[in-house]
Image (cartoon, rainbow, N blue to C red; front, side, top):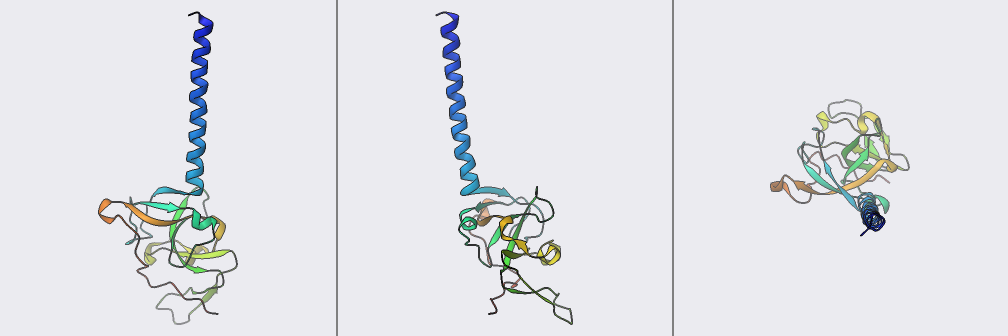
Length: 172
């Protein structure tokens, strides 16, 4: 075997390996972009439903099919920092009337969710920066719907309903 044959053989194997790497990379990208992803959560805003270091699965099909509903927990891009994701519960959809005042406020204030937006809040209302601070969130910032808690193992399964009772019915 001369040097030319050995070079062609090594080059062929290297190009074959690169081809498989690109193929599998494309498959992984499409899976994470259009099917779902694993998300490690941090911060207290969704306690007690999701706590720091919980791992959840966020599916993307609901977002693409416009199937996000009130009560769903979603992963969205932060309206303040596009490099950061937030995990919040959908409290209102476009057209919904949301009470924006606190329970002890004498005068109640309301806001309507505009077209193409959702109202997001953390389950831990006392320790959550959410739509009460930054207003309605564009639907386009939603990355996926959390459908399953994977970690810790003793909490594996579907997620509970909102502990706050803040999900409002549409007022037509």
